[in-house]
Length: 149
Image (cartoon, rainbow, N blue to C red):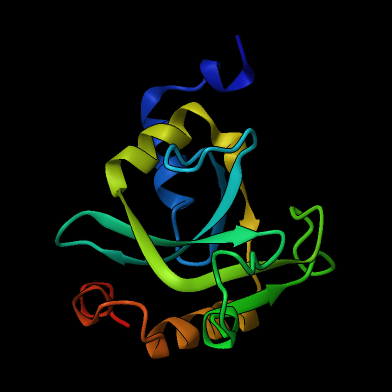
């Protein structure tokens, strides 16, 4: 039993909903990656009509095998540990693609794992991410429109 188990359901849901704001970093396990550790994601937008959250992924480095050319590598934003204490290292936000989660799934996840909300990113980094996503040729226009980029 954890301390969180003692709180009523409405309190846990309210906490989870408040913590899916734009710019929140969440430590989450993303099933599509075959890795033995959790990844940080950053919520970058929401589509309330479709109940979706758009997110980008933080990587510790830019993998040159996955991002082989200068343009793809340029779609990463450096995020520093000094201003983002949840990070173990200076890292990179991959802005070459946006992915989405169902909002209610994230709320359920955070109700059960509130410790996974690790903090906010700086306003400066958030604006850089949004600008990079807006200009990225690798993200389809319909996705940009769906999430307001």
